[in-house]
Each structure stands twice: as structure tokens, then as C-alpha cells.
Length: 312
Image (cartoon, rainbow, N blue to C red; front, side, top):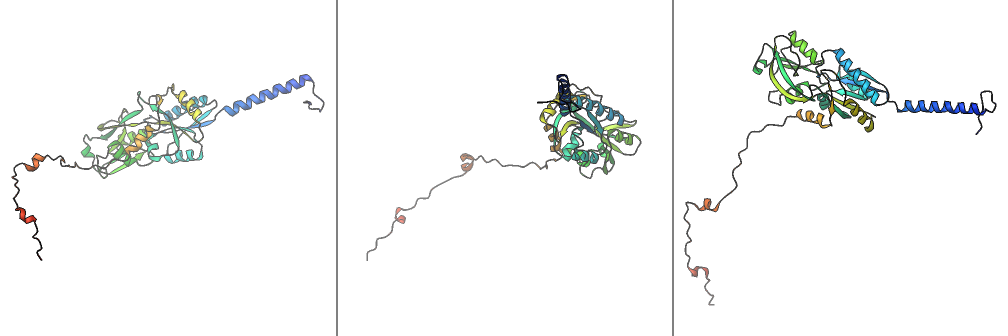
């Protein structure tokens, strides 16, 4: 193979060697850029009790740095305040990895793969509570307005079925309304803009607000992958976030599977309750049938079984 310089003359050995070095450098750079993964890491977790929006942004940014490094490229963070905006970004492919409320995923569905579950206080499931101002009994909240952090849809079902297990009538509360996130629900209740609120346990309550009812635990936010994220990439992300050190709201991550969300989804459908059914015993004894009875066989003349011969 002949090599030519810029003037069109056949290149000398030194020039050919320089060309080869340049080609190798370009090939290495192209290979590196091909391997690097530039992704967007979203955060939509309105039920997670972050103290402020800036705390959400800081956590998302820190998580994006870890994920970008794990994929050999860069990652940017994006925090979503509304479910519709988050769903639109996922549909367009603008978000590849996200930290999302399990309750939202359970109600909205979608094509995602669970990578890990966020932990707070060492646990990935967290209890909830019904809180109110100046009220200490559930009966006193009949017909009242209740706030709950928005999960994108079905907030009423989330409160009545997932948290209260169908034990409270559908029309017990006057209205169940979504708040943008947990901090907003607490602030509104503290200012007297609502009668009660349903929020995760372990948060600081406003003055004059007390816990009326302790509620069951629900799976917290989970880290999921969308679209073209491969199994190998998901494995790399899972390994990277295993040592992630976040903040008081999302301290770290633990392994999780799709069942973490499916368990919440099943609780949206409360089984119908039926009264006890009395089934009679089917065991019968011969003694029970003949006890207290007298049986006799009446004698019948043998001639009654014979027919007279025909003498015609």
C-alpha cells in the first residue's frame, strides 16, 4: 500500500508512521466515545419526604454522577414535579433511568425494569400515618378534607385501599386531594388549609398536628430503567448504587425485583368481604340413623307369591 503526503508525493517512512499514529489515536477516541453512555436520570418521588426541592435536585445530581460513571460516560439529572411531565419524558425516550415512587408505578404501569430499592433508615418499606389538627379520633374526620402526596392518579384508592385496606367507606372523608409532595401536604396542614393529611411516618409534624392513626408500610421509591438500557448496563448500575451514600431521605439502595412494585399494585384491589358461611357436617353414622327406632318385617304368606295354574 502506497502512502502520499498533502503535496501528492509518495510519503517517506517517517510520514507513514505519523499517519498510523494519528489513525490509532482517532480509533481509540471513537471507541471510547462509542462505549460512553450519556443518559438522563429522572426523579419523580413526591411521597419521599424530602425537606425541599433543592434537596431533591441535590440527590438526583449525586445519583446521576454515580450512574454516569458506572456506564463509562456522563449523566444529567432531571427532577419532575408532575406525573404527566415525567410520563411524557419517558414516552419520548428523554429519561433512561429514574428514581420513582413505587405507588406511582403500581397505579400507572409502564415498560420499566426495577434495578434497586431506595432505603431510608435502613428499610425500603416505610409506614404511613393519618395526621390532623386538633383531632385525636378517626371518627372526628368524617366528612373532612384530607391531603395526600400526589402519586399521579388514584390518590383516593391509595388512601382507602392501599393504606386503610378498605376498612373505611368510600364516602367517609369529604374529599381526598393530592398535594404536590409530602412537604407541601405538611405545610398546608400546618397553615390550616386542610383538616388532615396522609403522609409517611418519621417526618417532623407542624405545631398542633398529631397522629390520629398509624398506617401500614408501603414500598418506597425504586430505581428503574426504561427503553434501551441493556441487562449489562442495569447490572453495572446496580453494582454502582450498592455503595451509594445519599441523604436522610434516600440514604442508599438495596437489591429489589419487580415484586417490590407488584405488592403495592395488588393492594389497590381490596378483596370483597363476605360473611361467615355455616357448612353442615356431612359425616353420618349408622347408629345416628337407627337410634330410637323400632324396625319389623311383616310376614307374608308364601301363597301370595304363586299364581294359580290354568286348567282350561
